[in-house]
Amino acid sequence: MDAIVALITRLGPEFWSTALYVVAVFAICAIMLIGSALLGGKSQARARNEPFESGVVSASPERLRLSAKFYLVAMFFVIFDVEALFLYAYAVSAKEVGWMGWIEVAVFIFILTASLVYLARIGALDWTPHQKKRRAARIAAQAAGKSE
Amino acid sequence: MNHAMTTQQLTALLPLILATLTTVVVMLTIAFKRQHRLVAAMTVIGLNLALLSLGPVLLAANGEPIELTPLLIVDGYAIFYMGLLLVTALGVLTLCHAYFEGYAGNREELYLLLAMATLGALVMACSRHFASFFIGLELLSIPLYAMVAYPVRDSRALEGGMKYLVLSGAASAFMLFGIALLYAETGALGFAEIAAKLSAGRPGILLAGAAMILSGVAFKLSAVPFHLWTSDVYEAAPAPVSAFLATVSKAAMFVVVYRLFVNIGLFRHPLALDALTWVAVASMVVGNLLALRQDNVKRILAYSSIAQFGYLLVALVASGGRATEAAGIFLLTYIVTALGVFGVMTLVSSPMKDRDVEHIEQLRGLFWKRPYLSSIMTTMLLSLAGIPLTAGFVGKFYLISVGVDTRQWLLMGAVVAGSAIGLYYYLRVMIMMFQPIPVRERVSEPLNWVQQSGGAMLMAAMALVLVLGVYPEPFLQLIRSATLALR
Image 1 (cartoon, rainbow over the protein chains, first blue to last red):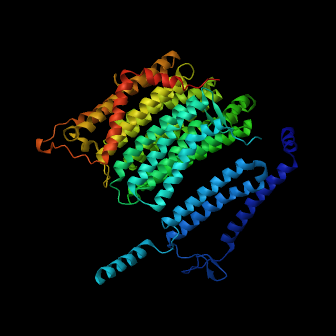
Image 2: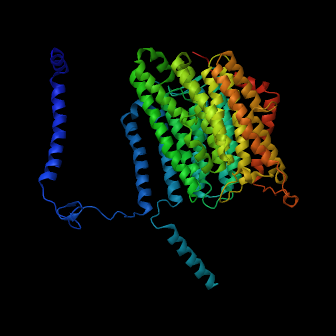
Image 3: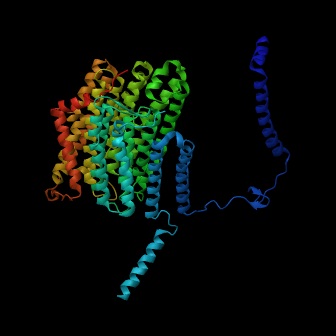
């Protein structure tokens, strides 16, 4: 008995209030789930089991296909955005790091610009799909061939 | 804080700067003129300049280590291994050029990825701080994911790239967590600073951190029990990329881990040594046993590389005395040999077709069609098996002498047993190449001229293997200049 009292006092009020809280969380969940399962009525219908909110079907069709371009652009955004964050770190310490820091940041920005040039040149920023472009080019070439 | 940099320090940074410049220049070249030969040539020139710049670095260092910020150090050890890694990367480049000539998609980005991965490897060779270690590691790994999956229309390569990405990501996460635990206990990230504060930390947390770092490292070195990805990825990747994985990627990891090991003085901690011993023994035994029943040559080579790094771990366990030398000579012989073996596998599959030549039956009678390539392959396999007069023998000899000196009998037993088992599957590949085939099929296949640079590289590798096997003294002296002082 003494041992139990000693344990309770040793762990202190913070521990026991947190413990009570955790138990209460589980108890409320259990009461809501079990209580509604026991007391609530049941009815079956085609769309009864689908989740809804304010009468609107909240989920879109599961095979929604987005163009791969969206992911590409999202990726570029994340990359360039994160890289730009480093400039903030430079901005707050521009005076302390002096010319050495300036050169480093200049190199950094140059590399960023170079990669932007690269992306633009390989057509990663073009929104029109390649095939469409290629088809247009082919049609143009054929037209040119006929006219000769 | 002093931000100024002396000329000496700038000179020491030259290899890294030139390698970085190479990636940027190659990227811009691709943007404006997409041409396979031009881009390959630019990359070769850039990496060669980086290699040549090691000369001024050596002069500037003048035998003393140059400290570049708390992150990097350029000493004899770093210079030697930067040179080795650059030469290896250049060897892989010649193979890539021969191989990707047959690839229908964009061929040029591969060189960009390769240059970036090489830069990562160089950073690892100089790093003396966990931050630069991790940056180098990621810079090496992330281009590798893309290189493994480079033929994007090939579902096998994609699968291999995916496997490597997920597993390598998990390994990196483990390693980061381990580093964080070490940092939590010691408050330092530099190797030497951690060593100084190691005794103050709680041993349990330090141990957990070290174990997590070890598992990340063992993944990259594909040591058992973290080897499961190796055979799948090596098989799925294009042959020259497998060559890069087996040589540059692993060697860079080993180089930085050896520095970490020596700087932190882990050889004084019996538990770490025990763990490494068991990893090494398991790698040797499991790697060799798994290779026995394989019919796919790329998989055989993957398992063989697991076993070879098991041998190399002996040098890590037996650190002290001549261990650095033994590790250096074994790494050198392994890299030359692995480059040769994967090089032959690349050239027989070049220019790239739907599937690489990889089944052992496809090598049947190769000698009657391509005598040079099969002779090189034979030499390389003998070297992997550790037969005298080849480089592999010298490497293994040094390892065993170091192991015997430090009385690592368990490891020595595993080395002997592993070598004996290994002989079987190396000979199996060799025998297959000399099987008789009908006379009318005995036509020597024409060697395309684009493959000639790869062929010349292989000839040089074979010559090096033989020279190393017969007269290793000059190389030993080179490696002796690159030893790390034990703390």
